[in-house]
View 1 (tube, helix red, strand yellow):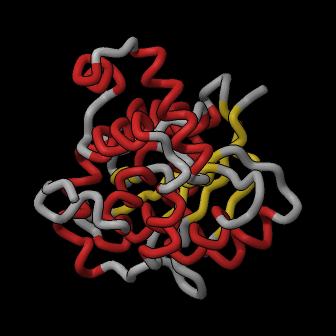
View 2 (cartoon, helix red, strand yellow; view 1 turned 30 degrees about the horizontal axis):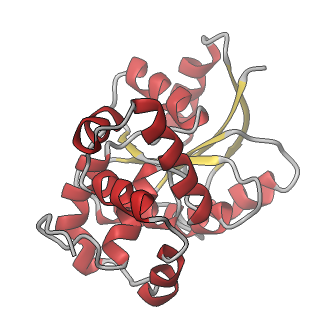
Length: 224
């Protein structure tokens, strides 16, 4: 079954370009389009979508708020933020809102297609180490989502799972974590899956964001 993609951008020309690129792929299908966040939410009520390509700056309802509302729904599609600027604080707000990553609008077509496939398979497009670097710069600007309830959620984790979470938050891959903790990579993958389930997180990017919100990792890379 093809990956069902929705394009959300207020520029028709950009949507047309993205649609042409995706239409050439045998494993992808553009099933919906919207010119702003409010229209996107409305369309999603009646259209099944796997991945949303979401612009940030749009009239009526911007991409960040639209992402927050979409990701709050059960069985929500994955959201990939598209931004014009490499260091755009709105895109990082989108990560906090539940997006699985972000990319520049001028990304090569092959990279965009790979990102869509990665997001669809459950991976995060932005490497945790990159996300940490970006959050280091922008976390003071972002609205707090409340640390106390999330801190309480951490109590659900075993000691080993907490160790793994800290290393994920520091940007280590499963292989690097396996080496550090003298575990098999498969075991690390299992621990990461349990962490995501227990903390109701969508992917590794959200683990990094949680680590910032709860103070486990502080701006500059220090561990709490």
